[in-house]
Amino acid sequence: MAGVGLGPLRAMGRQALVLLALCATGARGLYFHIGETEKRCFIEEIPDETMVIGNYRTQMWDKQKEVFLPSTPGLGMHVEVKDPDGKVVLSRQYGSEGRFTFTSHTPGDHQICLHSNSTRMALFAGGKLRVHLDIQVGEHANNYPEIAAKDKLTELQLRARQLLDQVEQIQKEQDYQRYREERFRLTSESTNQRVLWWSIAQTVILILTGIWQMRHLKSFFEAKKLV
Amino acid sequence: MPIGGESHGNQRPSVGEAGGAHAWPEGAETEVVAERGWWPRPESLPFGGLRFSFGGSVRRRRRGRHLEFLQTPDFPVNHEESREETRRRQQYPTPLAARITPAGMGDKTWLPFPVLLLAALPPVLLPGAAGFTPSLDSDFTFTLPAGQKECFYQPMPLKASLEIEYQVLDGAGLDIDFHLASPEGKTLVFEQRKSDGVHTVETEVGDYMFCFDNTFSTISEKVIFFELILDNMGEQAQEQEDWKKYITGTDMLDMKLEDILESINSIKSRLSKSGHIQTLLRAFEARDRNIQESNFDRVNFWSMVNLVVMVVVSAIQVYMLKSLFEDKRKSRT
Image (cartoon, rainbow over all chains, first blue to last red; front, side, top):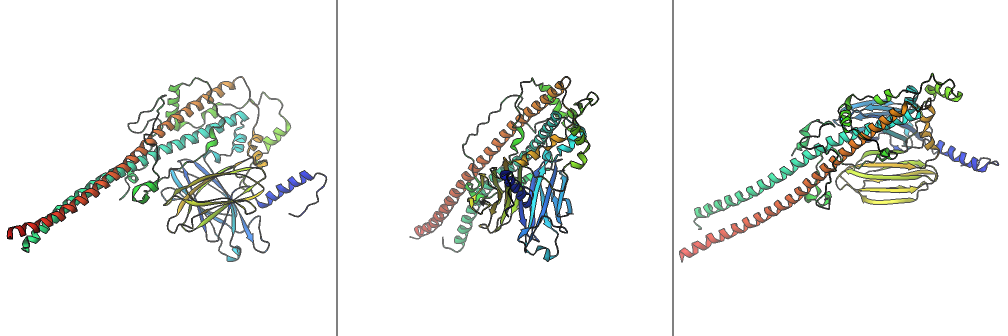
């Protein structure tokens, strides 16, 4: 960092610099690097009727300046969301910065895939694109400032609303848990049964094969007048 | 063999009825004692840890910050009412919010000017799509193909705490290499072939990098779940509470207390219902685990029987063959 002229308020200046550095490096969230044709997928296991909001921001690597540009105009990301049955729920292209939303209608593993739509090789000379990603599920997706302003709620009312939303989400997750547990139980019991029946069948087959072998060999030897 | 569970379809028991013959434990504590003290890991199962895909993963997911601030109030809870409420759960929009009326604006003849301004400005100031503020806790689940390594970065301020928890959900062996590096590049954590882990670091300013490495595996792809919990993030924590700027009016005391009590009662009854469901689920899980353990025993036993039968049968065969020849010689001489 270049030394900015620090006046008498040295501590505040340093703090401001730190803040500035943080702002320069971008939003304070998780990020990862993605190649040009690379596709990154994330799995969200959610109950049904749950809203999911995803936010992303991209930065491109500038090879000459060896730094990430703050934004990449002209570069888009393609977002594809598949539901647990493999059906595509959302398949859209967004700009270099975007926000996608979908609501699940079946419980299970939803797959969120991101890949860049860049066709021009020059755009990816360095081969790296930095993607900041944030995915909010369920009641985390609610925009409480907006709800507070729209319904004109006081602090206590808003808190109560938050509590209600949270508990509703917990209830949904538990319902989903029961449904999953039931499927798991059925699978376990069927596995149990199959193992038992197959073992019995195998034993019976072995015994029968042994008896047949003996009879066949005995008649063979008798036929050949060896016995 | 096709897994029988796939044909089950999408039937979900509703909350009011317990599925099948399972009784709802009304108030009674269902203590489930697991008879065996150990849980067989897939590696220790016979057949080299063959794992079936049940169409859903078991996962310890921690969205644990929900119930921190809740203390159980000593309000009498009407159980009849709670069951009614549960049955009407589907037609439950936001009745409490609708019933709780905002403080009568007509009674207040004077509002502070900044609040008026803020009330007028929300459409402009509301956080929109451009420039999102990411949350403090985030979790992701992703698929890591065989022979690949994927890294994630998290910018951190000074003296905050970063907790990262990861778990391998699927993939033969259920293990992965994990690597956590500080902004200077110094390796803070390096774990090899672990199936889950939790790490907390006190942070300096910069981007922390953590990587999941699947290069040791040539054929199996892993599904990895990781969760980041950030604390003491400083200025950013202030931003998360910015909904406080958008509230209007103040709380009046006389009529509202009943509404507050009612909503708290409703929350308590729902939470105790959640507790009951959790107990039930715990019982089911223990029972399923016992089924699997008996399965394991059964496989062992019948395999032993199989082996013994094979050996005995081959011994009898050999003996009978030999006896055939011996009889002939006796009759000749």
